[in-house]
Image (tube, rainbow, N blue to C red):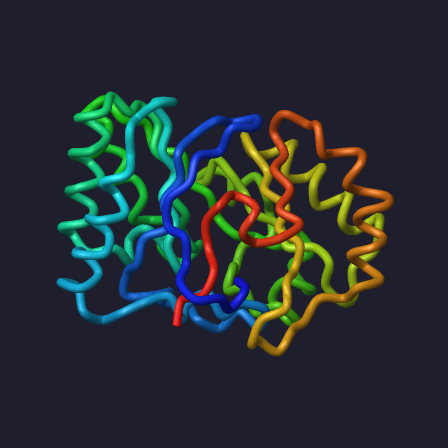
Length: 242
């Protein structure tokens, strides 16, 4: 994310899958090894301070689309229990029937219990994970993503939505399109994130981004199950998390 004054933590998405979206703060990603990411900087070990912030952000939720997406730097299981309980209450109060969370592969076995918990309140969970690419060698040896599963069908047993990272060194038109097609074949939704400059070792490749914009973007921009973020603030949230 770009380093500006303060992050924006609430927004409304009016295109394709209409929903409200909030960016909350938790204790931070437990993996923290991805070579392209510094998102984990938006975190704190002070659970009371996190809850106070999250409570203020969640107060903006209206339930206008009966869908809410909650993101944070890491996985939703990194949020404190008070925040999880408040999300649950807000969904009930505003008749939100579909709740979207993000989760790293390492926490996949914790998802089932959360599904049951929210289902008791009539809330369906849609869980998104960052695969970045379905090329396991590229993903694990270069990006260090921490996913020890090569089969997209196995990953899809836990997750309904997937994030891909494009615009980085080593990618091609063929590899980017292949990743999107694999995502569409196995998941309900695909979110393509174009790499933006940050403090991590891996930086965007301008030539690859230009290739994406010319060859890939026109093919998928109007696809109802594909979101494309040319900038990481395109959902209306994000910014500095110092």
